[in-house]
Length: 475
Image (cartoon, rainbow, N blue to C red; front, top):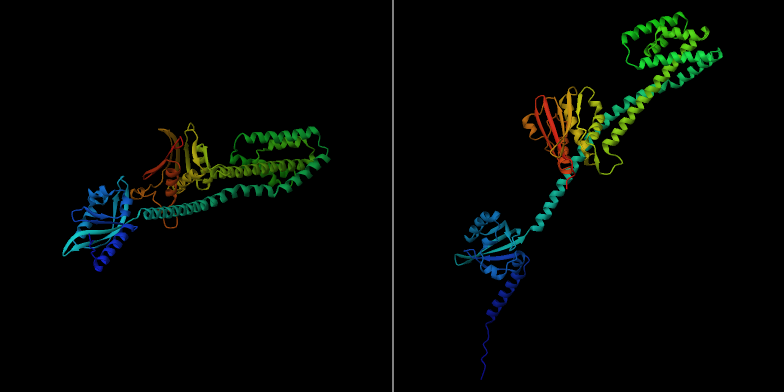
């Protein structure tokens, strides 16, 4: 049987080849491609579309385009689809699709219409999954926010450090200056007293005379330590002592009179000294007594000054938690007291009332950050009272939380400002007097680092900042 060979038209072969190339391009495209009829059913979808959304060919056969649209995008997509079915090309659109397993997929794309004559028979849509791009943008924005926040906190810390440095310089200068003054004449006083001591010894002052001399000195000093002297009485004693010394030919009578009267001496005490030493060396006995008092006063001044310096250093170490682990359990009252010491130069004329609940257990804190909260709130309170007023600090336990309230009797915060006080860069202070970051930083430390809350209420004459912290560390 003779077989018949039908030779195909070369034009038909070229058309078939072109269609196959077109289908291969669509099928292998990295973008999702779909063709949708006017009734919303799918004419075809490519492999990328099926792989991204997870639907099979059987699924697609029974679906409409609305089955893949997320509810949040439905109204928007209906409008856009109507435009495309009307023959209007969509140069750019965004939407959210839904995968077979319910996952939302953000997409962007464009659409054209396919016409047969004047009739739109389908829309061809080219779609890109932008999940990774949006995630990258979100990370970039988050990093930018973190960088801004860190920069803002750094600026606030530098501003706070400037204030604290100025205050500490003032606080340290007072005891340091007192120590320097006391030390300045110390060597000369010791040398002069040693010379008088030698003259008393050369004059034959007996052991009994030394005992009586030191006994008078000890008794007067013990009596003076019992309480402060009346300034009027001290002035009268000084005049009487100066007159007594001059009548007995003692040099520098006015200088000795001031020292002796301030120490609590009276003329009767000098009479006892005169009775226990030889008359020729009475002036030396007075000089020795006055020099001993001056040395004792200098030693006490130096001791007080160094104690105050040590107190400040210990407060600074506690305030900043130097040489401590970042996370630690601490008595919240220690941080409050250390902050008060640091701010002492601004609190000189402020009445500070402390109402501490000492039964509060230690709290888990991070470094010195809570001290920065107390500093920022107290700094504002001092400004509010104009450096002369009343500030009360109260602590208590409430529903498993430690509550710290800092109250002042200042001018108050206007209602329109109160709503915004924790916003970054917001300040009601005159330009140049506030960064607008102090309370924002306080809010971040309390809420973000310690899982606590911070709030404020205010009216003229009463403003209260309330910080609530979990007693047990957050899980």
